[in-house]
Amino acid sequence: MIATGSVHSWDVATAVDGPGTRFVLFLSGCPLRCLYCHNPDTWHMRDGHRTTVDEVAGEMAKFRRFIEVAGGGMTISGGEPLLQPDFTASVLRRAKELGLHTALDTSGFLGARATDELLADTDLVLLDIKSWDPVTYRRVTGGEVAPTLEFARRLSAMRKPMWIRFVLVPGHTDAVDNVEGIASFVSTLDTVERVEVLPFHKLGAPKYAALGIPFPLDDVPTPDAVLLERVRRQFSDRGLRTH
Image (tube, rainbow, N blue to C red; front, side):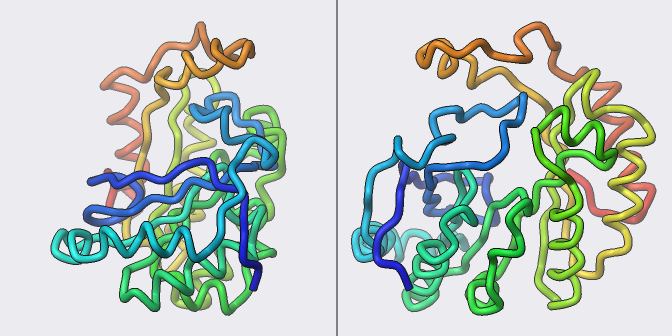
């Protein structure tokens, strides 16, 4: 297992990134370039801080008791944590040694890099399925959807709990057929505990400005209540617990 990785930051948060209060470790580096990404400062590994697994474990240990009482755990996010699979595996192992519930927040695009050992130390996978239509997926992310779908099937076969995440972007990911495709696929997976429909927002726009990068969706509105309800209903109509 690798001893160091490129880390952007860490935080302690409640009600996001998994159940309960969580220590969230954000790694640097991501192979995708989602148009709605709100953390462009995590795109490049070179911009992160070289950090040892021992340092991360030390920070997790500081919050261990608080996290346990709050029914939480540790989530490793990014960027994309599977861009650094050995470091991610090492951090997950140390979190389990501390007795913490673990979650992996990933697009699944690099799911093939997740070893069975890494996943054995992962209690929950937060899987972002960004689109169903391959053309839309490429336009929105710059990548391919097939690896994510294959990873989802593998997790289901392993009986690994999943929370599916879908970012709703008006005019980009909101087509009825696109949503229906995701909902239909997710309903075939045996271990999905919930689907989170995440409304597009512009909270990351100041980061783009600070980096001197144009925000690609500056003119796109946030979803209204009617659209949000329609999309959530498409998932719930498939028998999926939807948030």
